[in-house]
Image (cartoon, rainbow, N blue to C red; front, side):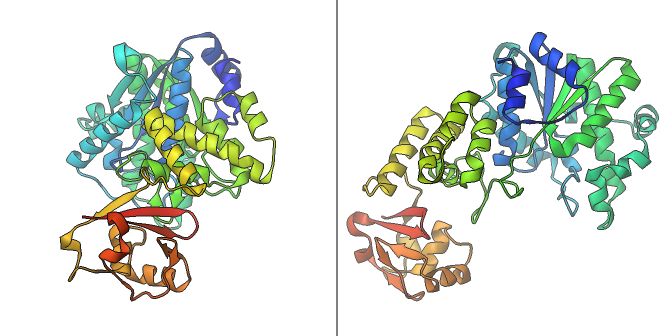
Length: 408
């Protein structure tokens, strides 16, 4: 199956500026395309995963990806999907975040020998002369059309700054610069970027008098239309220091039945036919498909060795075994204890299973906390060395969140 048809069969394509031209470009030619990433955090998260995987798919088909890091636009922030203006980051924070992104993309995108390009729009945005920019670029953008765009329309009632309105111009200018510097003819992004992508496509046609194209991808949402990648602990990150490989694996292993097929198509390299066979069942029979999803996604981000470890640990744990080697772990030292003991609520906060003691108290009162297979019933319970047989204790929050605590 050719790459465009594969993207379509997976349900990845949301909108495209000229389907026949883009189909021909991707299936019968080699092109340079770009996907932008604003470095607003020091890690990519599950929401970025669809675009990174698509970058990898297109590269495997022989196309050259540009990963554009928004060192310049990140200093403004994209208003798309936001009800308030984003926090403005410093140049140092942005540079640090960009470096983190580079490392996290490496397992999926091959940047060696010019096979992919890393670019930073700070290289051309931070030195812009504003008057010259408005004369050359601003004249090609209609304020009426901009305000009609969904990304701005959502913000009008709450207040939209002119500072943020410049974002569409800058993203369009990015496409123009990449077109001039690298011959980039296609921008790919999430479907919430459609208006911004159209702005860049039209700008290239106006300034360079040659075609350019845009393609948007469906957002990673569940069967209820809500964005995926959120847990009680917060976002699901690709950085193992923020979301452990075990928790990452368990997130995918526990998704809803209605979301398994879509996630397999969006986030794995398994053939579409194999995915459809795997998910052609219901109820508990879908557990095999969920395990395949969890393993494949964890393998893509954390590598085969780590994926094997967490799968083995999860199977042993949930199958009644005792292998806890790959469970998320915290360590208590003498500094964490008072007279050789620690309150159960303090322990929950220490392990980050809850964000506050009040949340921990509710958890205990609702019967949602287990320690070493025994239900904890008293929020005021105090743990001593006796509660850590062989120097370790296993905490279970609810039915599926496990955590090992070592006592040193």
